[in-house]
Image 1 (tube, protein in one colour):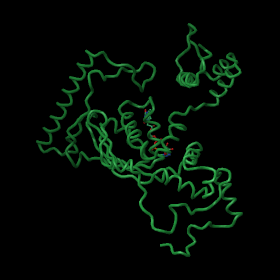
Image 2 (cartoon, protein in one colour):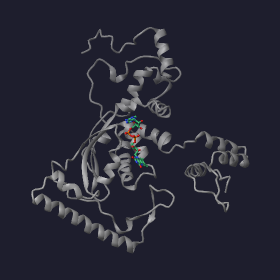
Image 3 (spheres, helix red, strand yellow):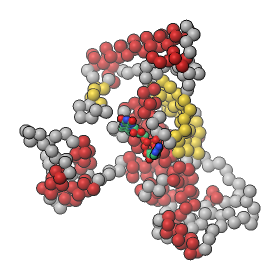
Image 4 (cartoon, rainbow, N blue to C red):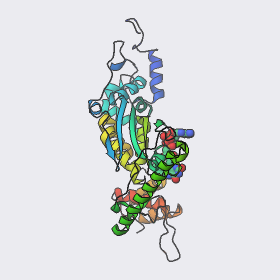
Length: 345
Ligand SMILES: Cc1cc2nc3c(=O)[nH]c(=O)nc-3n(C[C@H](O)[C@H](O)[C@H](O)COP(=O)(O)OP(=O)(O)OC[C@H]3O[C@@H](n4cnc5c(N)ncnc54)[C@H](O)[C@@H]3O)c2cc1C
């Protein structure tokens, strides 16, 4: 407990030490040291809450045909991020930055630890193949439904006849376009048959007394699982950046989009805005790309092509056609977003 005479909340150290510390943290100009932020006073605190999240606590947001994501608990809000940052930058930051400005500064400069002050605990229901991708994000805390302990959830993700995706020609990990509807109809029927068959084999094994841990071995990856997933905001944003990306698989993207739009955008609106501006919708230029853009701004298309060529982006086949090149394709997408015509076409 802190009494009236407590030194907590007072600025520790001498003026010189404070200035040095300010330099070390690279704080914005004019920031002065003081740790006594509004939430850091010796008086009793109330639990910070975000009304927009309180009203959706426990409410499942549907994803895919039978999945969901629901908020079980959360800690912190935009103000908690600001408070944590001001502990390192000092109250003086208030003069240079309002809360929004400070959050945007943190996001722009990859000062990420203040975002770790916020936590989100979700209850999710996800097909096992999607969960397999999800669980690769190691910086979360997880408890998953145990099919050793309990009977597997009797639900498998189904695919509508018009939702079968074709293999992408240029990206081995991706899909592009849809299977013709007559074929899709057939595939959906065979999917239903195989799911029904594997469930009945599973139940037959259980009925014969086979242990749940072994009986489950032929259940399909489409079987739904459930988990509690707790993650801090910094790592959640990292998850969202990777899994909202068009290169992520459609199913996990569906979860990422729901978590983003229904939960995170409401929970920490200032952080979400900064995340959209400086991460999700930001364009990244490699030094090669920057040199090409620079040449095009002169404009010197020949130089731009030479730079691209020197870096192996413009290799041709025997008929003079450009060979497929992933980095060039990504660069072309960036140039088009910038409204720049491709110099090599
Ligand atoms: C489009 C896409 C395709 C993918 N394809 C494949 C694939 O073909 N095969 C495959 O195996 N995976 C694949 N992955 C998974 C990917 O490689 C990552 O495992 C996954 O996205 C989790 O990312 P992460 O490690 O950054 O996240 P987290 O595990 O949450 O880690 C966050 C950050 O913490 C740090 N970190 C965490 N753990 C460690 C550690 N042990 N050592 C050092 N730093 C650590 C890293 O900086 C990391 O970026 C793919 C992911 C995406 C988005």
